[in-house]
Image 1 (cartoon, helix red, strand yellow):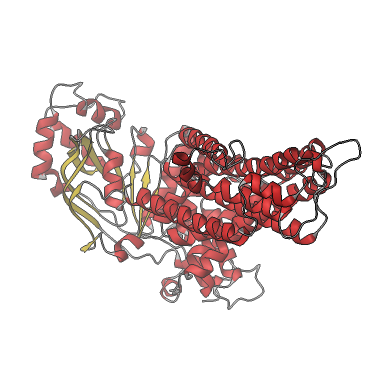
Image 2 (cartoon, rainbow, N blue to C red):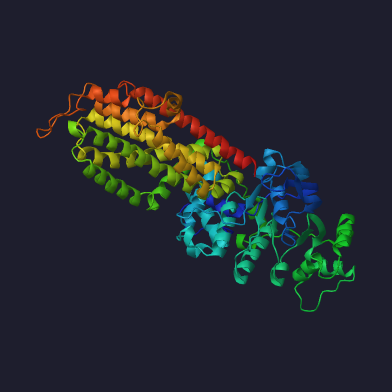
Length: 618
């Protein structure tokens, strides 16, 4: 055992540690065959249409382990739809049977055996390659392995995928081929036996496409079932596929070995021209360039006439994993991996969110600077208005501006940011990185100290410049009320970001803010508001925020405001009269806090339900 591993692990001081067995364990993958029969998929024919469009029309097939399989066909043939149905990513409108080694896909065990790599590379842009691989290892492997074991596993996968040179490069700086290989590497951490890839070569040049195909071929030779959609591969890439499944208009026209494709077409009198790409020729036949042959192909596919000559390649070890290692080394290298619990995943996600916040200068450094500048501007604009009886209206305007500014600058970034992270969430949640509730709890908890910091920075500057009462109790009460206002605004932003696109969500956020401003009780006092519209103010969280802030400044036995000597009469110098004019009781501070907490819980729960429904309706 030591002789077959000492070359790979000479850099480590502890030769008996688990890392020595982990790298080789990538070869010991469970072999799973994917079998499906009579798969149909019906989707709505338009957004508001009740009519159904049949995308897949009773297709059947069998994909074996150890094979690299390509699902091909012209645009609109149903390639991606079939791939998503086989993964379980699409379940609505699907009929038929899908089995993994005879086990129905609907079981939890079946879904955990697969991973789905989307056409778009959904990667967190601010992490380096090594960091995002480490996060993936921590989320999938847990504490059953030491940190050194995970480090060695990550480094080995990066070396196999050709990503070692860019391990310290952030994801948003990677090339298209590197991003695609990184997307594959992230899912290799827990060694899935079945891998689905949607158009893995799209957007790549010929060299990067060939490299990606060779990586997939090597993974298939390790015993995995690799299934990918591909539009029109070149001849060199086509030769790497062991099995080809071709669709047209939702029906299968060929399935079998790639080298048997041209002999199969010759049965119909279709001869591929010399020096012509076989994949191009097959697509031309399917699209009708050589006449209407596809009905005959569909009928022949249903009869399975080509399966007599079908070849299933033997499963061979991959050179990158140590092809020359003796057999006895592989027999002793099985490692039982225990996935972390949801609390451990929550802690990992929480740490990663804080790391992203620190690196996103627009969310951290720039926003803090803007809060300081705007706080200073408001403080200078309402200078010495807090204790001046002749400037009470202006001071109330300052309190109103604080509510609107903090709310709007929190709601809008949340609306815009969340749709950008939605694709990452869909990919990672489907591939069993974590559960939705863990993700949602992590983003909720991670925002609490950040929003508190923003509120403290803004209020600390503007509060003292505007001449508010220098009492820690009042300052703390106003700060806490502003903090609750920010959390409520963030909840609304999360809700709109979950339901809508960034453009629609931004419009809804602006409309919601206008509604809140109108019924908060400042532009139109509650005492002047028509009774038949007054009840709408109870649905406005600005009402409770402004009510609590006014109470913290003018209630709780505050003495009469100072009237300057050059002013004859200060009409609003009495705190009791100010509260009466504004329609504020003065003792409802904690009641307002309770209402805001209920709003936060209700809106976030609604956002969670909307997000869960969005994931279930994929």
